[in-house]
Image (cartoon, rainbow, N blue to C red; front, side, top):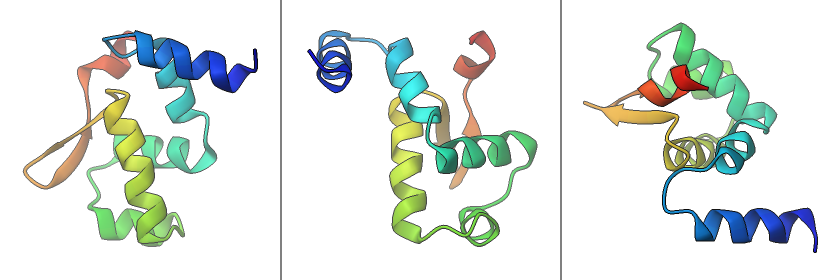
Length: 88
């Protein structure tokens, strides 16, 4: 069984956020850059898109993955880290 299929079955079977989904979410270079940027400042989306040289689609796709993994939340139009990342 390939690693991709194994990850798929693990993620589908878990009701809560799994370690695999968290690691998968931050394994991408763009995702880790966004994660670090959110952790170091409270920049808005447009500033992060420009600073990290991403397209809007790339940015919001990565943000979706980070939110589904439980690492980032959106509150009053701003993204911030959740309490989950402190337990890693």
